[in-house]
Length: 501
Ligand code: BES
Ligand code: MN
Ligand code: ZN
Image (tube, rainbow, N blue to C red):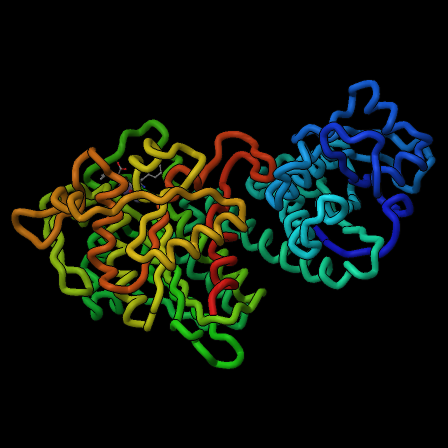
């Protein structure tokens, strides 16, 4: 979708649909909505009086202009109550309005920036949120539906602003919102695509595209490289599969060459392109969903795409250990003991606890590259889904400062997280009889013991672990997140990188 900014009145734009808005309990309509209402001879005011347009959140009322405006239709987006209206409210309103426009087969859509008028939100941030909401809501994954063919959908979004003074901020916000939405769509595509197409090799090819577009450096470690480095944990998972594993490393350096006062920030994402469970085989029902077990890796690739566009003031390293987890004559067995890159030995109790195995070596590698702060994302445990459902990701950390920074970035992104405990008492559950540590800790606190296992490979480096098992896929349409892959984490990581010095 093409996105542009146009200075003028929303009542004068040529488009198939123009989007204005309304807070709950506001009559008569004011601002841009008032201008449209006037041009329509008071039609919107009358619909409000009749109770057909209420301004409630999720409402997207379509009004035909019947030649009174250059645009064919007006969509009035409900903003909900004005108290508490925020940037995520902007995303949601833009998302529902965009869907209504798309449903009415609009090709060109114009919108005002929700919140930048009477609500008093910062115009640039509101513009970014409006563009994010619009593009993310319009996302669909159709590439494998041959019968439906291409085409359809909104082709152009025009962001309209009357006030000259707000224009520069809005232009900048629109570019930022576009970058964040496109990076999120990239991650969604990777997660929606099945595992026969998104192999570790395919992920490495996508990483190469990201590197080229953003001017990042790329390193892909092959099995032999990983053997040389002693990555016995990563390789213990990879060896059951015929698909060659890849450890993908993208690196962004700011133009001025500085790493940032606190040193490089590293993102590490679980890139399990398919998790069958291995010899500890999963049940068949729903196993197709395990194509999404690379959602953490996809989020890191999406974030690096955004970083390549937004060019934050800090060095960012993105690491994605990519492999399948398959049962075969070459696969690891329960009871096997392997040695990770940092020298620690691990007893494999369940080959289905494979995410923490590959993260262990990826984190050790990121530290060797000089990572001074680590954020890992992983669809790590079903236990986290039991604890937090599909509303919040679990956040685990050893560092108050970094935890607060990630919480802030997540709030800015409209991605919900919840801090979880990491008391060392839980560590008793992953003590092994025969090795330094074992890879499962039983059912109680399963998300926490998963996090504590990873912490063993983090050391003293400030670290945040996001368990996104409940967040990677969405079973119903949300305001700007259609059913399917969500791209969760991309925008949080991008905001985090931008917040760092
Ligand atoms: N990829 C799964 C976790 C998962 C479950 C993600 C449901 C998304 C939805 C992970 O590799 C796994 O199998 N975890 C095990 C860990 C256990 C063996 C300690 C689990 O959660 O059962
Ligand atoms: Mn598993
Ligand atoms: Zn897994």
